[in-house]
Length: 70
Image (cartoon, rainbow, N blue to C red; front, side, top):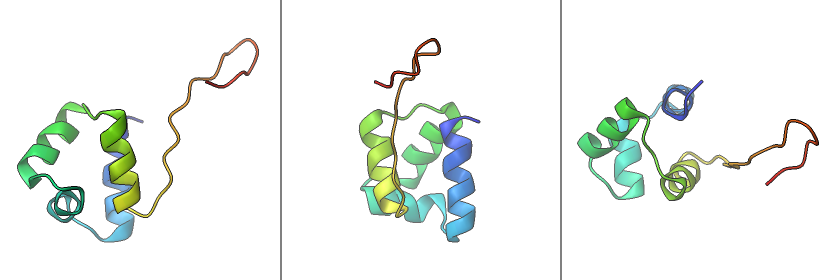
C-alpha cells in the first residue's frame, strides 16, 4: 500500500477532506491532491501530514537479513 492510499484511508477515518488537510499543512488542495495522485511526498511532508492527522509517522529501513533498523 502506497503512502497516498494510506493517507486517504486515514482521511476517511478522520472524516477529513484533502482540502482540509491541505489547509492544516499550509498548502493548496490542488497541490496536495496532485502529490497524492503521483504518490510523491517528501519525508518532511509526511511528518507534517501525520501531525495534522494526529498520527505518528516513522519512516524506517529494516535490513532483511539482520532486522537492523535505520
